[in-house]
Length: 179
Image (cartoon, rainbow, N blue to C red; front, side):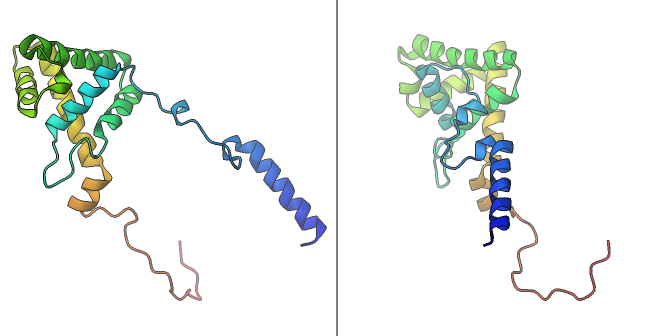
């Protein structure tokens, strides 16, 4: 490589490092900079995990916990919903804990699946205003997360990331394509 080409390559590299500072070799980007999480306590995180597991348990298919739907919902709600709805969701997780403590004298995350189901189904009635909206919102988000997952799309739909396939060795036409 001649000196002029080497200097040109060096100039392009330096320009690229200045223009794209996040692309420096060896630099580790902190993923929390771009994506925030809900301000949940450890108990609320456990309750969220058990709630999604109750909605979508593992059977012959992967469940919500195996697909990390609880983590997805944490990020989705924190980054895509207004602060008021975030607070309502966090309050709903506290509501689950309160009902579990009042009914079973145990934490929601330590209950068996049938007891968790009973608590959630108890929220699914028109008389429980706050509970009904929390139940409906949570159920909708779990279904959205599951049906958007790579697992669901690749195993249960005809999803192709790049539709049309790929033909690696094809002859190039001598006449260019008309636009």
